[in-house]
Length: 116
Image (tube, rainbow, N blue to C red):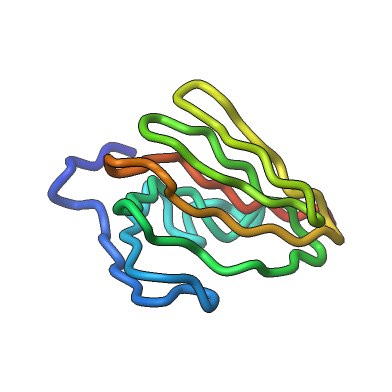
């Protein structure tokens, strides 16, 4: 499979999961293309001051790999600041949220994979 940048689906969301501002997700693989292994594989772009609200994962886990910018990630009540090259994983049964406290866009790869 090959996809050009022009062929990738782009999804804009306002207040995603109760967060602030808008986010944009560039879908690398659609859920159908993940062959039952998960439901999300994308690059997320989050402008300064925006966030994805705190939410729970059940039967799946989510990984973030920071490409550029700064991220404040909270998992089960613990918050850490992450930078380019850092990653985090919200395990099955845990809750998390992410925000951009920086002055530039936050860009990260997000993958949600099934545990069962």
